[in-house]
Image (cartoon, helix red, strand yellow):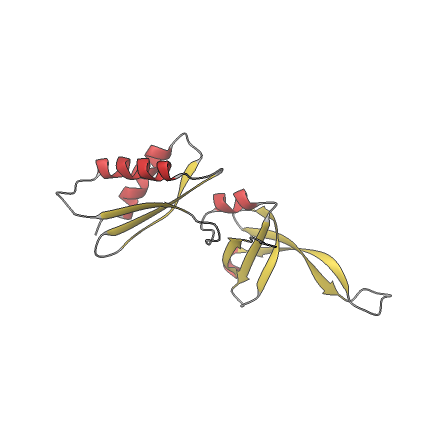
Length: 155
């Protein structure tokens, strides 16, 4: 099985100086390698093809046969790195907490410890009979977050 660390190192060397970065790399026992990359702007198919050729040039197929797929992190895919979270700051996100609660909110901040979300919630307000919509801002540590995705509203 090909070492994913070697693939990631080769990819990071090639991506140095660009706004592209490695999100994750997986390998199956059959040596099917999937390398996922993202960008602060956008990832084109040419960038994926160029990176694939660069990595394949550094690996020896005679030593070990493999299949390499380089792809971009798709719209609606789960965020895996802090850089992806920071790219999404100020935009809507869908967050599933480990307790099963799903939140649609604006991602206000992403730090090493967790994320800060703001969303509207109905709460009892003193002096009012009905619950009122109130903007709530809460911070969730990454230990409480199962996954986060960019929220796309097609309405």
